[in-house]
Length: 388
Image (tube, rainbow, N blue to C red):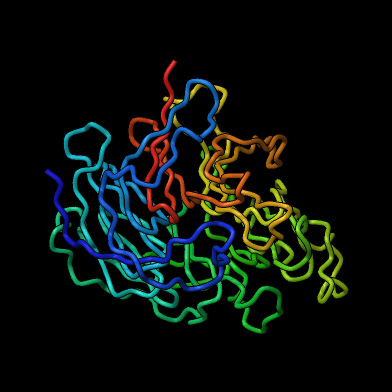
């Protein structure tokens, strides 16, 4: 039996050619989608490597960031709405059968993380903690505010959050613009703090807008995606995959893009050689968001430690040249540098009509090794599995 704690959530569902950029707040207009509906999905259009298949795990409107508990509860945020969800598969068939609303009335609650049984949720300027959350899914506790001194700008203001190997909570602050300098060192950075909100500090600088980061399973180094600036043409600049090997590094924004392109307004101030180059340049305007290193033993051995990236897809390209992104890609890295960049799952974009029916956002690996992928356009959690 499917049980719901709430039935209504509204988002703006638009096709790719008219989609809003990854820098605006989204209107709410649609009712909550059915939990296991296949309506509007084109799974037969998805191209995967041999042996892989894709199916639906759950539907959640405007599904954005995900975090999975050890007990198998999947928490899902929605930037375009005001809620955070919990999803459960109680009978083990890898089809969700319960959906709970953990929080509502929040401003762009994109970032979620788990630690010591508590769910952490990031609004634009505030961080909240819901204690002992899995024991209280149907009656969530009152949240505890742990921090409320981030900028209030909506432009690039939503957060992706995660706990690092050091036990600290990492929180990015996007640039409040397409391209600009700021006297406030918080902008265009990734910060970190203790779980109680104390001792906040800037970890790295020069990051225009990261909406996804993770840590190398062997080295423990931070890897993150970064969305390149707009209005430098259809093919420039490339979005980035970056590796932070040390605190205090600067990754170029707003002076240098993709490791080699001087910004026409600010690039004269510093040479590109002053900044950390991307580990891998991705495609132009692909809008890379969530990423994970493959630690799944259910995938073939050759996929071990490959970096999977959810490319949300372009908006800042002319219609006659077509959109980029709207797929899952893979990067192979050696010694901290990308040596291969290739497609893993594509077909979310209809290239003939230049419209998308889904837009990948985040990636997690489930307890059985399958890959879960969120999508904020069709409102779906996809499940990708491998079988010989």
